[in-house]
Length: 284
Image (cartoon, rainbow, N blue to C red; front, side, top):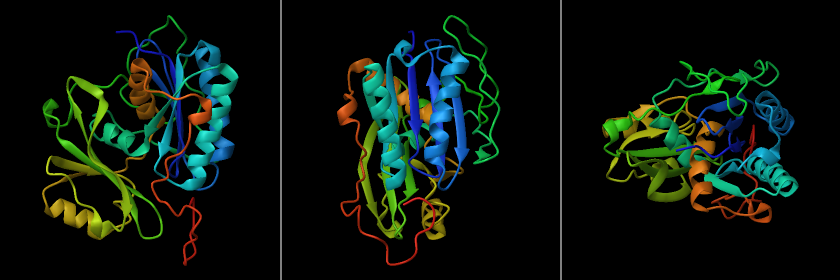
């Protein structure tokens, strides 16, 4: 089956990334870790991807973005960028859960990228023009291809559940549980709806055997509790645009999309304007 051509972005955490999924199934990825430079990085990433592929926005089949939950500033950046691109090119948008994107990466056996820090910069991505196909690489470093997903899923395709916990600041985490079935490897099955709360409130669904997310390393008691329960931790995973592109491509294929005006963040937390009583560093 020919893939749809999708441009995707995610700025929901300290990871800022953009990816271009082409019809041959290859995904070009730009990825950097930054606390506050998402707005400066994301548009140049998009420009580099389109220039490297020799295409225009109008050549794409749709857009996808990490709609959250995540840092409020980052979510607004992603939504604003995607809205502008969608309006200008007349494209439909797939709003993808940033937690589900991490879950997809946890079941993806390829190595994670070695991210460039803001200001370091990775080289321009390799070309992925229409009609050209390069073999999948051994890795997906910042600025290189993120290869076609392997059919070898967690649990050898038995659909083991994955708990994702991303940092929500204010001594809380965003969390949810997902499963990916071998018959539909890019369609997340929600086992536990997305929630926000103290790490002590995190309760994995009974089918969960794995956990991931940047919130885990920030709450050692949470990691200890989950590992004591026999769950396997997948370290160093952030929401990443190539995962958003894979999940978004399936949403675009079945028409689970919105127009530009409805490409909105999902905050989960109701009191988005309430400041923390303590100083909050980084994105919030």
